[in-house]
Image (cartoon, rainbow, N blue to C red; front, side):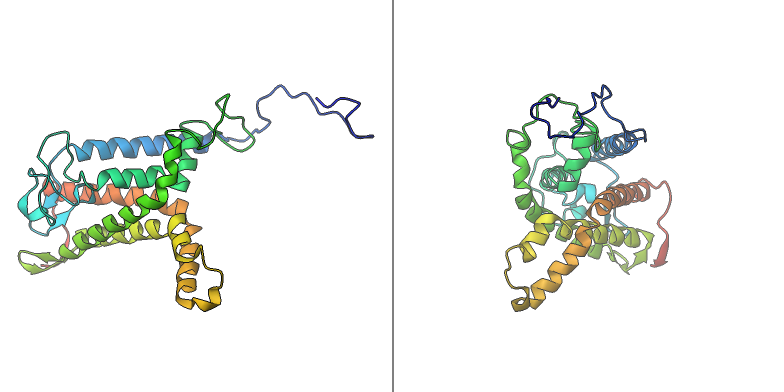
Length: 268
């Protein structure tokens, strides 16, 4: 508390507040929803990754993004667009080359940091609410020091988005020739959202125009920077939307592959 000697003349002493926060709204609701949402998604994704089945629809060449690229010798031959390089051990996912980098890209994402810092670590859980930890060192120590590698994981995310785009294109060419169905729409929508999330990344925005001193001398890069800046404002929404589209796409491919219901076809 400020003493009388150091307090400016006429200023009042600070009130001694015992409560941890004076907020009376449901400030805990957003962290709770984040915990439920992320836990549910991670649980579903983990189960699906280690099911090792129902990831490929041979009739329409649908490949779920959870198994792309399929690189173990356990993969179906037609689903392995880039070869089979890893042994088919149960603990090795079919998409073992892609999944670690996608996980690291999302874990180090600026929005996801905020999300799980506030929800899982309570650091802090909300504005004007005290931190759940006595000490705070920021991102200056291991393992949080690795958050600075986000800019490099971005390049891997771009490559994986290209692979997912190639999968969506191949899905138009089934054994019967050109085909178009509901699965194609879902795959395309998922890829579009993935690109939106990837290029709305802060690292992408910095790569495009972060070091430019004169936008007038680089009109093309300036337009690209403006577009990524527009997307960047929506980065949080795209982060959640892509979790939804990934799960929806995987579930649809799984359901068709397991013959729970047929694909709705418009052409062939």
